[in-house]
Amino acid sequence: MFSFLFTQHIIWTMIDLLLVLLVIIQLFRMMKGTKAFLFLNAIIIIFFVYSVSKYLHLTMFSWLLEQVMLILMVALPIIFQNEMKRVLEILGRRNPIIKWFIKPPVIAVESIDIVADAAETLSAERVGALIVFEREDPLVVVGESGSYIDTLLTKIMIRQIFYPNSPLHDGAILIKGSRIQAAGCFLPLDNQLSLPQELGSRHRAGLSLSSQTDALVVIVSEETGSISLACNGVLEPGYSCERLKYRLKELIQPVQPKVNVEKKVAIKKTEV
Image 1 (cartoon, rainbow, N blue to C red):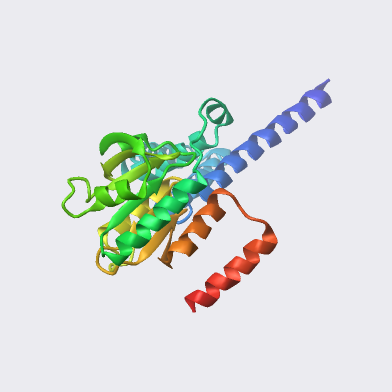
Image 2: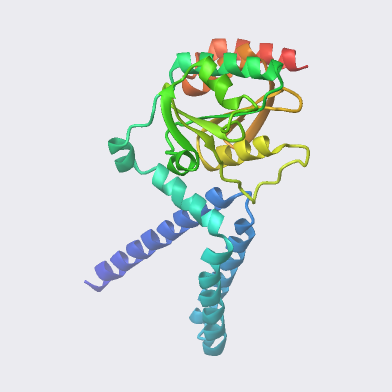
């Protein structure tokens, strides 16, 4: 009987340690590249030292480490609000229950063609633009920051919105499915991103949104007329109309490996 209880205790202890290890590994993955990563390392080291001191019955030292950990736990949500928000958003995004009830908008191929053609025209006219495609992550806050218009997506409508004399030209437009849901939207800036100084406000805003969500952001520079795409926290500059169409379609509907390789080789040659 004693042997059975002892074995059971060891099994549950191993399961407990394994769960803690999995949580730590997942936190490291989600916070990698942020300032909170080093902070998390410090907490783990302090916790390890605290566990050893408890095992060795170092009462005063254990009490001191307990107070330090308590202070750190209180300071963590205050100092690293953006990182904790990012972790919670990732956990919520991966929740299968939410995905079951909330169907993400489908980006139509026609919408991609319209946006790419409009971006080419705006680029030729040196008119700045910021165009956001909503995907699985809901962009409720982004839509509420602008003017709700809910109109059919057309090339003329995009040009009218970003025309310099338009009251909505400074913000972004939010595309949901095949409709423009809102215009004149403000995108949240991620202060933790290390961005080159030469990037303009549109590029910074688009890159920040793509690092926080799975949105696709098309950016047209007002100064140079260059077309860029922000995706997964990476800024891809120097797009033409046809390349932009291909890249967007590739992201929403991955092509066959053979075609994909041929296209990527062609793109690389063009860039060189």
